[in-house]
Image (tube, rainbow, N blue to C red; front, top):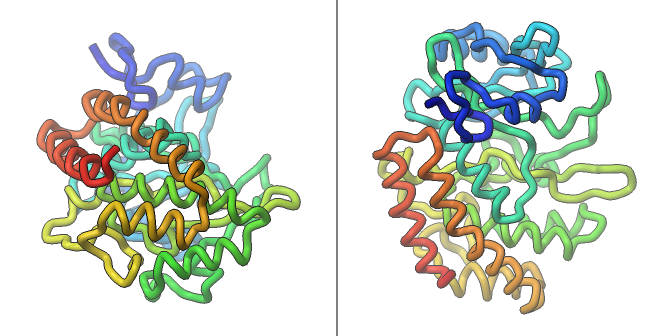
Length: 309
């Protein structure tokens, strides 16, 4: 029996469940294979790179959902979705990002609609709906924290978690609310081994008169993919990037730097603790190989113990 790559639920002989299709659109009744192999997607991403504003290590494509024909079409302009094919060097990035984003959502972290779709070579491609688009042509103002700090792609690591807090305090309408969101997100990324959360992986979004942290994105376990990695966090915390402790993350970062009360800190810790069982269920059901699932669980066990969840 197949499992839907959008919902992880059984779907008999179909590639997608009805629920999975309806998440994309209430009017979608079927979805064709993406008309490009993983290699062809990477080539398209390279060829279109100068036309798109999407940046990063992973190859990315802009796409629209063609509901009438039941397929995703690549688009240089007006794309509502970002597609990420299999990486030519790092295995199972799409499967890794998809399950990690689901794990984040289960812990109360806001994430956009996302999932996996099948390509014509039967490889899986990750999709995520753009949160900076509304209607047919409207754009919602979004800026990543590298932009706010006057840094670039090349200098996006030249900062610290302390400076990141200052940026949110400066630009967000209700800073303390955003600090609580940030604290939970930082703890989550530590737990799942996401060691690549640089300034461009945090953004603020303006909705009406309110500026706040955007939904989370680019969440994945980089530790099990990047061989030889020794860092645990991309931006230094308390002057270090490795050998982080509960005291560093909870007492220093949460209480001292983010200014959170004990009640707010405990609420985040409880949310993460309560999500543990769901995380392991998601890892069992996800599309990672058995080897990567086991590596993910071993790291998760270690980090959960370190944070005393």
